[in-house]
Length: 434
Image 1 (tube, rainbow, N blue to C red):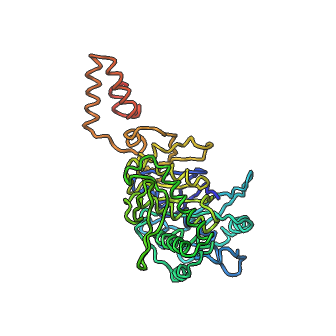
Image 2: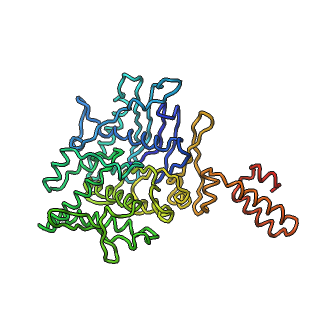
Image 3: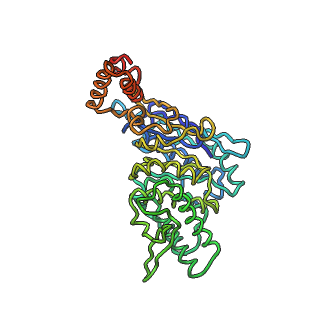
């Protein structure tokens, strides 16, 4: 499944705003308050149509076992303007299900006319039947995952039902691959507990089913780690996961390629966050499909959070390489992420870098052309809109004017630098007659 377009009407900060997504990867940038998180939240909410369980309507057996349901708008979701919440509020979404050489188009809406009315079920019922009409026929189910800017430190409360399932020691049912997938809180402690449980049980009573799960999750973490260019922070790439268990206590360990082991929870914050995401994605995918190479949609708010610049440069490409069939929709404040994002990968429209902007009271977006390989400073100034220090600007202009009279070659090099960093229509470039 892929998402292609969404239109927001009276949703949070957007009065009427439409955005087209990349088929494989979409990266949102923009100043604070431009709506990056709101866009991701709206897309996540819109996908809850999949889990409609209204009485009197046809149900699909698979979703009966999930804890998911349709998510209605909250009281704070409508646009607040002139001391009023504006209605109607709606999310209008286009997407498709890929089926080999063809595709099944999906169009649906979440619409609420007033504060007291509910969602219009008829606006997403057709898409619901198309979705399950396809996925009910095949074993493979799409992976869905959302990682907020609080992940993994905001931990979810594990439901009593999930606790009971974990206590049995049996493999979790496939439907739990969607367990609280859209929550702001993290479910990673569930997947840690589940891995530890399956690892120990397989050691005590060898079981090919449990062993296959353990090997698949460890293997995915190893593959992801191996694609990171700079591993100096934790010394070596990850070779897998294991468990230290003694005196009724168990600790999840990360095994490094140099033979050492570290508790998962003692990893540096940046590595803990991205490895927790991999653990979450791999575990959900394995429950749903019995493998860790899923199709689906993954949302990551602030993908660069807690990462050193060397890891910021790699993180997006590592996720794309490790989960090549997944559509990633992410936000970032990092110039290292965007300057290492190659929009030329795939065919036109696969990868998009979108800058969210505001002109007076109107929000709009601008698709940025491929800037792969652009230097850090140019990304900051020209793409992310960070101001150059005035002292540096003054000194560069003075140097140009000085060498213009003495050495045309040196003046030419300074002019090239200025033109790389400033638009030709800027007041500085015009004042220097460049």
